[in-house]
Amino acid sequence: MIRKVGMTLMEILVAIGILVILVLVAIPAYRVGQQSTKLNGDARALLGDLRLAQQNTVAEQKTYLVKIYSNPDRYEVVRREASDTVIKGRDLSLDVAWQNTGGFTNNEVVFTTSGAVVESGIIVLYNEVSNKTVSVEVKPSGYVQIN
Image 1 (cartoon, one colour):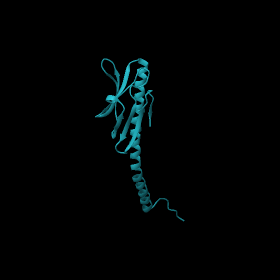
Image 2 (tube, rainbow, N blue to C red):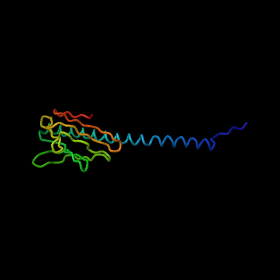
Image 3 (tube, rainbow, N blue to C red):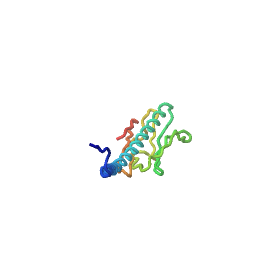
Image 4 (spheres, one colour):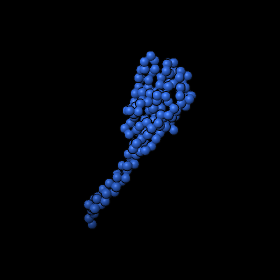
């Protein structure tokens, strides 16, 4: 008795067809997940840089702030003295933009030497592709959190 080992052409085509269908279903889900990752990553980076400005203000007893620019979508950590010195700058990811920077005069989050902020508010980041938002809340005490 002779045993045949291997797959027929039809079996291979069916297996390839199933793989193609799985890939076509997975690609949109992957893209949405990737957009959410960009949005959350930008929010976490902003949170970290707000905390950096706060820590530098308390440690050096000099005013630090985070300045938000809408065109292009970026922000800078700035030391305010006789003239402003940019400590760090960051552009938001592609497809991520500011939706709202409510509560802050001149789009500046300014920290006091005690670690509090001059004005509290909420910064909302928006991803145009996934249509999702993430907000970063700055409380009067200087506590910063992602909502």
